Amino acid sequence: MVVKIRIPTPLQKLTDGKSEVESSGKTVIQLIDELEKKYSGIKERLCDEKGNIRRFINIFVNEKDIRFLKGQKTKLKNGDEISIIPAIAGG
Amino acid sequence: MLKLTDEQIERYSRQIILSEIGGKGQEKLLKSKVLVIGCGGLGSPCAYYLAAAGVGKIGLVDSDKVELNNLQRQIIHSTKNVGIPKVDSAKEKLLQLNTDIKIVTHSLRLTSKNILNIIKDYDVIVDGSDNFPTRYLVNDACVLAKKPLVHAGILKFDGQATTIVPGKGPCYRCLFPSPPPPGSVPSCQEAGILGVVAGILGLVQATETLKYILQCGELLVGKLLIFNALSMSFRTLTIKRDKKCPVCGNNPTIKKLIDYEQFCKLR
Ligand SMILES: [Zn+2]
Image (cartoon, rainbow over all chains, first blue to last red; front, side):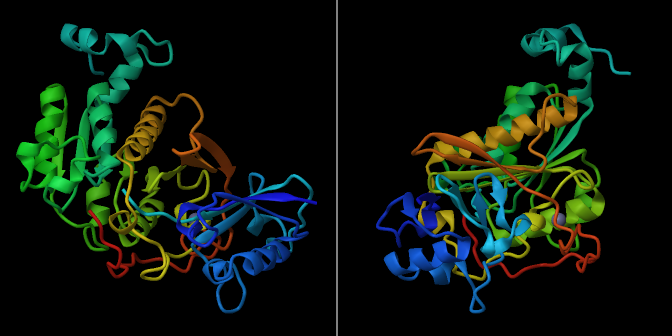
């Protein structure tokens, strides 16, 4: 099983500049842990000390916000596209 | 009822012939009042096109002066305007383009004390500010005052936009409940911005504003538009009103406006 993850520009420093990476995580939490193994430091950017997704970052599975699905327990299936969307303030 | 003059009919003829606009739509535009917050990368193209389209009254908010490093993207200003207040430079340019409209300048920084008094005179608010404290302040004020807000943010090659119509869809806090702590998200000053990205998102905001006034098409209400210049992709994600939203939820905890510390100032 493979899912595609779009990495936002501010986090691409941690993914060797890649804007898209793959994972075989079966849930969002597994996906984050798998990303952390490959790209050390990324989990800390996405989650707070308690392991919750930070309040200025959202994760979407396909076009849907996981907060309105099952949160980090949201199940992933082959071919899903995961987007990490941080708040950006530039103008 | 406002009657279009011959000159107005000539000036706006290319959009009056659109069946979605017509003379009636043009009159709506001429009667409308839009506040553009920030005369920077987003506000420049947005205000310029709104002025061209004949939005009757445009308010401009900015406390900064024009700097040379602004001109790479803030196209409403000119080299000769370096050093003067951005709102004055913008006003001059807009009135050169269209003498048929009124420009009101607010050369100040928005705070919890002044914002409600400023936005109350306008039909639509455009957020083209450049920092989180202002963005959260503008969101909360628009929710409390029930003013439609056209939001966009940009960084490097990326842009995001959504339209907030209080009571009809989610607000910015439904999407991002609280601002990031200082230093956790780079600013354009630190990270850079490609000028055209500001142009594209600023015009998305102008488009949403015109559609709102004309009541035509589908707005980005409940939708987050994500743009990336490198992949040249526009994607639309679904966003929902959060019942637990601190400002527009069922039991709001924010009833008074907050002045977050200015921690990510950029120009
Ligand atoms: Zn809300």
